[in-house]
Image (cartoon, rainbow, N blue to C red; front, side, top):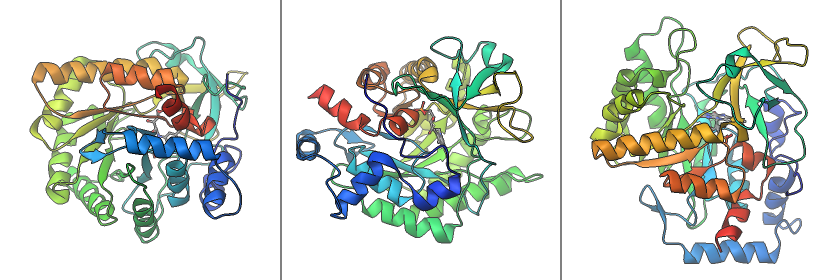
Length: 383
Ligand SMILES: Cc1cc2nc3c(=O)[nH]c(=O)nc-3n(C[C@H](O)[C@H](O)[C@H](O)COP(=O)(O)O)c2cc1C
């Protein structure tokens, strides 16, 4: 069991403080090392990263990549976080989802530790509706960490995030890729046409930064209670048609939540990747659970926060199931696109399991937050 590092996102601080002062722990040390203020990485670790770069013949959406492993949309708030991720050997860094306009963050706290009854949350079971214990006890084992995150997808103004994302793109090393993630902003009463136009505008703003790969989050709320955009494959298809028309040859990836039925996956594939508008499906996002404290009361403060997305070790099985489901549909339809596996990757064995399940690339949010050396551990395990 690896010793617990300080997470590079400090869960005891607000999102705004993390944005202004982060990253922390080993990620901060990596940035200091780059600035010459201290030895952030050992010579052996640096040599290991360089050796991986030279040895690799792998690609990610047609781009050379040292190891198709990285950090998905979320914990990398700005270019200081993505710079540190690259320095720590995460070769794919997704810049946290941006919007066409400034958007506030949910009330603090935004992260809690969650403790399901068993090792996993069954995405089709009743535990997620009955209540899962959530508190601030993060334990001591980064391999078993599960959390909930409740941010509401905040965004800076494009005038702020565009130059910062452009810097993030420019700082990727050889064999590394910065992905720009965005989502549309659905406001009350907005027509589908206006929503699609907002998605297209935001995709164009991301493309203007020079991002080599663009991702759209479809695991965001759509009209109706507990309905996500990815529950409406026809609308996702219309958005992807319009976005692809705007961004041309730039590889386009969509982020999907867990979909319980193969038929839902098939409809999604048919309306997106099967006719070439989308080059990769990235899955899964968090699993929505009702969170309770030790007394059974709502764990997160505020209206509309009785449920929140769970991620980390508890959703690994769900993520692997979804990757196999998407791979099965791809084979049955004879379609050609990549799968990016996300959900509960906390060890080198988890990386291998996702590759085995059909993922061309793998990413870890929670696992990387609590083990900033995870990419190096995976590279060492493969060597
Ligand atoms: C702190 C945090 C913030 C997140 N924010 C976003 C986001 O802005 N956009 C998005 O598509 N997913 C977001 N996610 C979801 C992750 O990309 C990922 O799908 C999910 O956490 C499952 O992976 P994991 O088990 O490795 O954490 C976030 C996750 C975390 C932990």
